Image (cartoon, rainbow, N blue to C red; front, side, top):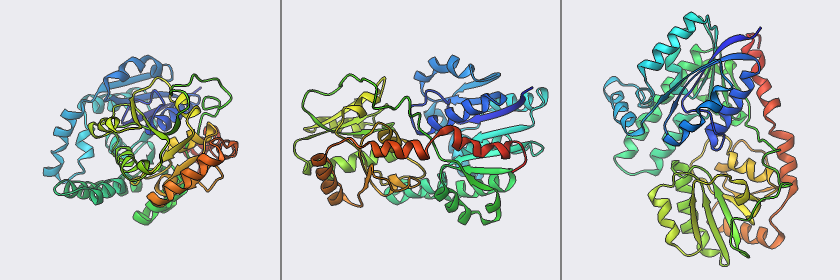
Length: 391
């Protein structure tokens, strides 16, 4: 008979088409085979309401609530007066708090997995439970990176969030039974921040659905004939992705004549949309399936300058048999492999891309590397002993 388990996620874990949702969905899928899952989560994109029934298939019960980003940002300002990280009031919701408390009591739930640090506030007072935290990345460090790349006064707000959220991350790591990160590098980085919790800090890497991201399938070409396409994939309202494509469009792409740069991803920010006015640059917005854009590109680029953890966009391109030109930040947590070329600056990006275009764009060694190291099932097994309470 399956045990009951509470799973709290800051954003509905479906569809698995962007970084956090890919990981949170596969974790949900894994947990649902072993537990009766009670899911508490938010929807911050109206497009995602149509996926509610898909998520419910994996759960005994769901509490899925709307989170309106503008209202949540306004509510988050209360953290300035309480001294907390702004991320906590951003995700605070009385209905979810009540639902969590009632389900823990009524269903006698003794275990919880929390995905993303702000969701930990819902089980802080439930120390009687076995509590597992999936931080994914060290989010506080990401806010510090934002601060370094922004001007006044945003830099001060981001720096404050980095400090306050780091304090909260340390508190949760100390109180919870185990904390997980997306890579050993990320886990080691947090051990230095929270040495008092080092024995409880672990990692499990992301994986790739290699059957889905397969170069063996037939994909209709979304590009005009004869185009030498460089492709970037990712949610285009996410600050690190915005920064990456703006930098690449300015510093690298103009030095690569005869190529086209396609930016493929949902909700492009205005700054990204404006790039479509430049010769050779195309901004697609949301697409039904990213695989054709990978399959028919000459190669993929990942020029991130702000990053933590493992970049799914790199793994998916490798799984599709594509070579990748990537920044050092984009390769954190991904071992050296024959499918990727690491480029430290714009000049190296230009040289490496020119070399890859001359040599061909497909390299199955990258796919073989992904199959060996990034399998969801084997990576998620690292959670099993901790959920059983016998690490």
